[in-house]
Image 1: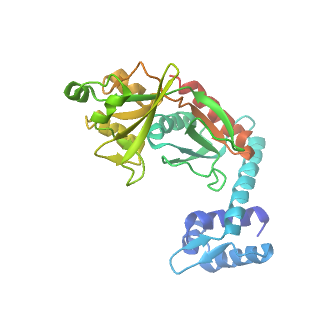
Image 2: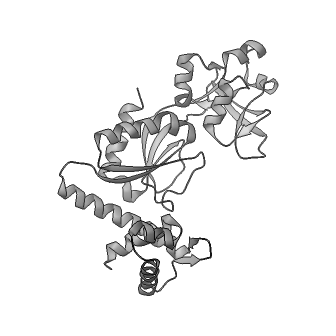
Image 3: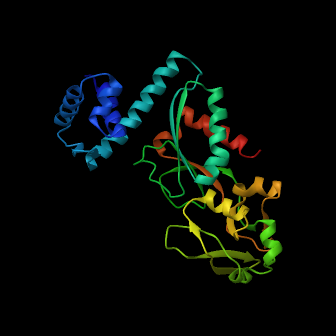
Length: 294
């Protein structure tokens, strides 16, 4: 088995989770897949996979090898298809984004981009936790900032900020806060992991910086669910301006405390250094930058 085919086999094993599923997908006997993996481990002099009765898991060496396989195969596919069809984008883009923005804006833009570039494939993973782009084999992350120091390459897509908002009906019942300290008497809905019943929201007015402790009767680790609770009138949320722009336009949410500013929450396209110059990743990032403003 040649080197590239061996790498593709290993990626398939890592993604499939079982040797039998890979054998079915490849149309070969399970013993062929087992032999291919054994030969690879012998050639590398390292155990890549831990086998149990139910599933496979990668060793530390296996994780590192998987990252390199994805990188090499992605580069090879881009070169080969680029030569075969000059100018046409092809290959795979592996993207991660937050839940709310991903469902509202990124997924529809992926669909539009792929209609223009039908030879592309895309894997879109949504979640509000920051993931390790290199370990996860991601080409691109859509993240809010400010961003910490890292080796990742970032491009600004949108400038934004946090808004305090609730459904108009909620404000009618409870009144709007005139000062951040008034939030103590409101039901503030929180984004966080289970058990995080309190949070601090930060505001500025001139040189004054205020950190207000807020709490409420519910919290969730999904930004879209948080926004939907607010639309339903359950309480007050603090959300990025680009997450609620359409809800504000449609009158589903209304803001408060407009005289106070919040920390900038800009939106960035973030890539590992190895993918920053990828033609398809660059093209999709350019597409996002043009269309997220609309």
